[in-house]
Image (cartoon, rainbow, N blue to C red; front, side, top):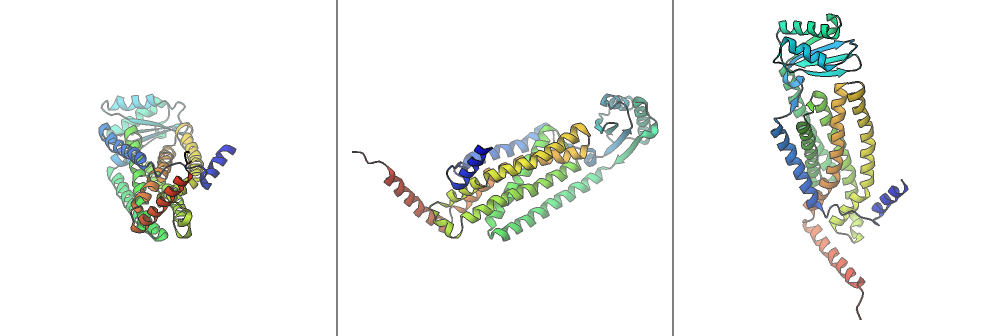
Length: 335
């Protein structure tokens, strides 16, 4: 722990430096590959695995069962409709949820009876409900509207706070980067997309934006006023800023990821709670992707789009010339 603290102190003072901005082509390549895979992967796999809330269908919940075996539920449904492929999941220690495509009233009654017989419970312990696809469409449209409103408001607030639209633009690019990759992971792995997953997906935007604001605030501090006289080019000052906040970003990500991972474990393996699992899974993926985008995408991209501004270009030219003279003076003179 002491060595890690010393490492962080060295990064802050400049005694050590990771060349993050200078290796931007590497980070851009990694991000481009991730985005390409996130777009092509779900297409090759056949699209996203949307939950019943988006596709519509019938749902059965069997309560107070002594055996939560999923095979019993599958056999019960197939015995009524051999062409149906049910989705079966465990809810807690004594309940089972079964989701199927849309069924007729007669099929619903038969499956209720089959589930009650299979799990040896009264038929009253088997509840059924129908979910229309229009409900999922409404949720999707509301989520898209919420996303667009969030992006617009976030862009305006950041532009006003930092007094430059370029920081705002880069932050929004990083957010879109996080959304695409997180959604792509869901599509590639086949994780079910539920309203809980959508909520988690929107929640990570706040975390990613917070991490970006922290780094950008340090960049603004390093690149304004008298700090420009430190003998560093604009890109070097930006690189120093991201090094100074690197340990903080890592610590913040670890602290945020640990409870989310705990919720994911409890939701998936202990309680069998689908909503907890879906939200925490999206959050965990988003935290990791958001940390990467802040450090390795947003920061180098901001330095790149500003380094050709006339004032910065002129200042950097003088600093590079001064650094060149200093390096030449430091070289040993051969006899």
